[in-house]
Image (cartoon, rainbow, N blue to C red; front, side):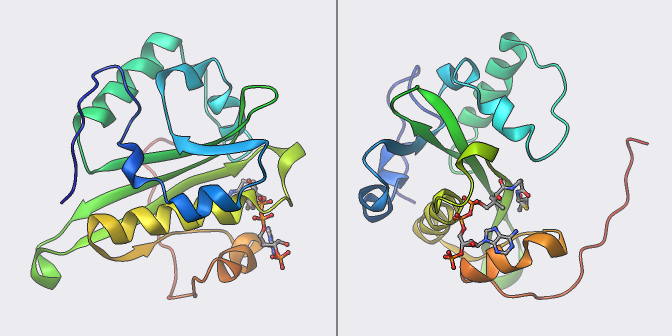
Length: 175
Ligand code: ACO
């Protein structure tokens, strides 16, 4: 697994996991990159509020969560899209890599928490986030990436090359 972090103050994962082809297809006023600590101030949590409840997260708590993820090399990949003119995060998505016993100790990528700021939706940013996470999944050795979504978003994921493979089942413990 080609994974080497050298800078303890660097991004969540190495830049070598960012697909150069996808970055080059972004409009020049946007950049796709790994999450970094400064993204708390750049509004990453605000973008996630377009997806679901986030809560009141202090910068300290954000940093602790970031460090937890960063210490687990090869497991957490959060990519963001930044709008260069404002320095704001306008898109975010996560790939969580699960280690299995089945499929010869195979790896499965779980795509989670995809969100594009309302004002930036419809500009092909979402599809680039998914392509970036697919690239990472393949590079790290996953035999597949999977995700859950509402029927409302099914066609978006079909456009990203995904197909419906069944039902999502859930049991909540927070209510
Ligand atoms: N239904 C049908 N088609 C869609 C939808 C949709 N809900 N959303 C996008 N598309 C289509 C677009 O029209 C486009 O089609 P085209 O290539 O033929 O023109 C294609 O999908 C790519 O669209 P993008 O512009 O890349 O999509 P966008 O940047 O707007 O991002 C997203 C889509 C992420 C769903 C965004 O609308 C969003 O953040 N929504 C709110 C949060 C959310 O629901 N996130 C997904 C949760 S599921 C999960 O996290 C695993």
